[in-house]
Amino acid sequence: MNEDAAPKAARPRLFVGLLPPPNHQRALAEAAAELRHGGQAVRTANLHMTLAFLGEVGREHLEALYDALGAVEGEAFELRLERVGQFPRPRVLWCAASSAPAALYALQGGVARALTAVGMPLEARPFTPHVTVARKVSRYRGPASLPRAVTWRLQDFHLVESRTLPGGARFQRLRAFRLQG
Image (cartoon, rainbow, N blue to C red):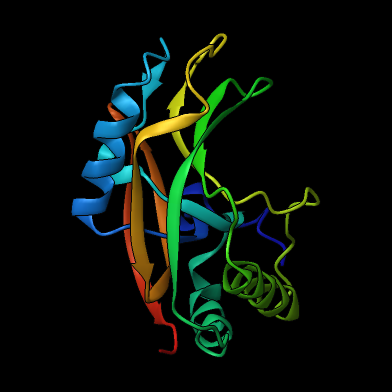
């Protein structure tokens, strides 16, 4: 998909992700706030797990994305976030499951295949399931576990537009895709 000719405003930044319900986002933000990481906390409403980052995509491709993602089959599953870690190079603090369910990997694989089938280039790095909770973390030396685990049942995944504004990124859910079960 050649997006070079499209005006910048016509090319939203998109990702496919798992978005916890607001009560789970709050619980995760509150637990992460106790970690004393010294970084900049991610806005509570922006806490999510990325399944695939698409970058800038012309709006003319949205219907193809909706169709492709709508055909992805996946099972609903429970995700329990309790681990804490840091990616030193991008300086982010993250939370993850000690043992991510197979259904999560199957869903991410299905999403990747669907996007590739409609010509969307994907990042080459392997999928590492996590939720970024803070940025600009110099060196995290705190506990390897959240003070309280956060568990949510995933029943859908979303195509999301990320808008960078002066006050920080804002997410707009473009479409939800239901999981079975």
